[in-house]
Amino acid sequence: MVTSRGYNLATAKEAALKLMETTYIVAEAFSAADLRHGPIAMIGQDFPVIAIVPPGKVRHGMIPLVENLSSRGAEVAVISDDEMLTGRAGVGFVVPAARPEELSPVLYAIPPQVLAHLKRLDPDAPRGLSKVTKTW
Image 1 (spheres, helix red, strand yellow):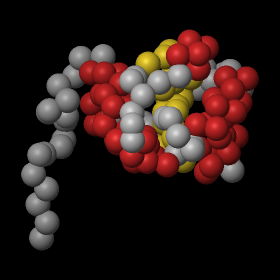
Image 2 (tube, one colour; image 1 turned 180 degrees about the horizontal axis):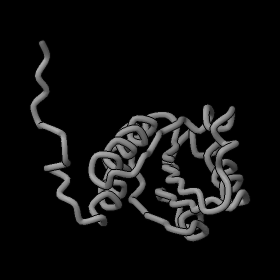
Image 3 (cartoon, rainbow, N blue to C red; image 1 turned 90 degrees about the vertical axis):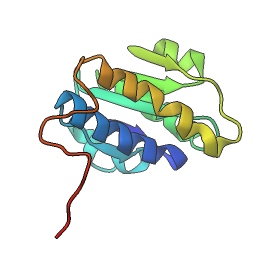
Image 4 (cartoon, rainbow, N blue to C red; image 1 turned 30 degrees about the horizontal axis):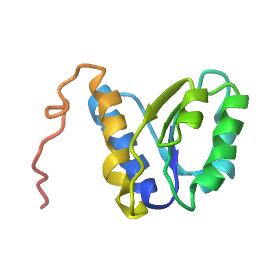
């Protein structure tokens, strides 16, 4: 599962898609708000979650969610410029602070791509996918 809010909800969706395409792992992205209203019920011990915690207005609500996920026993990877938060996570990716906030997806998209690459599959040639989509 991948979660974020604001500008980086799109980053979370792209991260889930990239993980599915390149590692063949089923992944779903949820906004932090939506995650709290239902899907969080399926998260328990060792459930993998990537939390994208950007700077700005959304951070305030993301930190308690990360703490909740950790208390449920989830395996939480945090992508953030907040070194204290990434240091408390099972896996942490520290990225530079983006200013202005709306540019943060450019930086926050890199760690999920690194995760996808760790599987050592060719991200440019996922099985069954074509770079060209034909529509009839």
